[in-house]
Picture 1 (cartoon, rainbow, N blue to C red):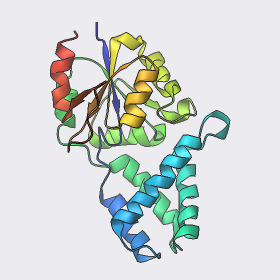
Picture 2 (picture 1 turned 135 degrees about the horizontal axis):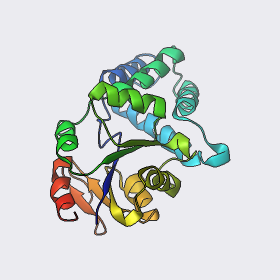
Picture 3 (picture 1 turned 45 degrees about the vertical axis):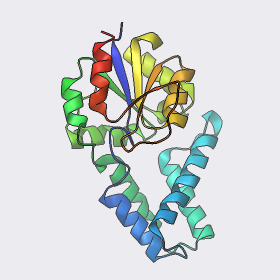
Picture 4 (picture 1 turned 30 degrees about the horizontal axis):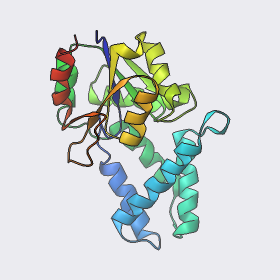
Length: 222
């Protein structure tokens, strides 16, 4: 019997955009050798994901530390000339104020099971983000707690520990196959992939277009 729902934060609960990120991209394009916003975003994500993949246990870096490392790479790679402290603060504000997807509040209100949010962001930012959006999940689980980012199974196992549920009693909802789906599967959790704008299909996972389409799937299992 299904007893709880795990849900990813960035890209699933909140959008990967917002005024803070837009300002960061604008300032990178204005103050470096790279002037195309899409290229700036792609380069940022490249370095971010590379550091998250390397960060594990003894080599773990927080998201704050990774931001500083990536900014240093941009300084070397594209001659970024900016106030790094200001750019860092913009990222911190983005982690808190990134806009929620339109259906998120309705999903939280209508979901019959407790919801636990799993995030790579630090707990201090996630707590403020929930307050900012008026959301009250049953629990928050962050990479800092286990010194590992998705898709490492430790993060999902920590969510099971926090919730008190077993792997066959929860679903994990996320927007990334490589981190959410593979990570949930590694911990024995059934995943659901959110693809709001379409994308590659996968035969081994249920795909929905938004969070509201998860509700009927929950009803089938309780």
